[in-house]
Image (cartoon, rainbow, N blue to C red; front, side, top):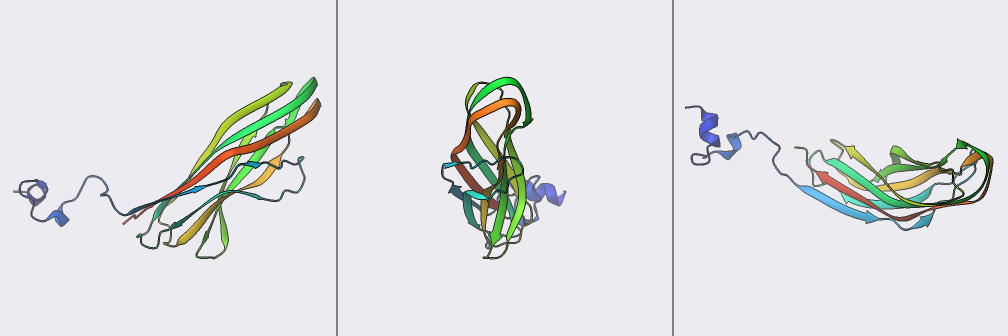
Length: 186
């Protein structure tokens, strides 16, 4: 009789280590939740220097995991408001916010992991829009360490329009959250 069939048969299983499952077995997993605060997005005109603004952070310690896979989820609610005086409008640059995910492990150097952009281009006399913005980032086989993941706004530019006077334009992050999930890969 085939030893694999004998081993994996629930009635005859005497050596569970020799059984090869058809899917990954559950292993150690860690979930860590962080939150951000509401903040006004300090948008500047295109081409102007921008100072990064922290949005959210989360700390996760993967030192007890083997070759951890780490998944980072960022979610936010953004409110955008504008009051325009229209002539013959042409958008040259939409309102844009660039978010950057970084990590710092064991009090070391901050490493940028990726960036994501939120853009809104509306041509209306009065605008008050609330939208969700989210992204996910995965790291496979990361080195086990205690890491702080942060999301910063690294650039935010106001709309630039031809034939339009922008009376006021503002945006804010109503709420945000950052979660980290890590699991052993071996």
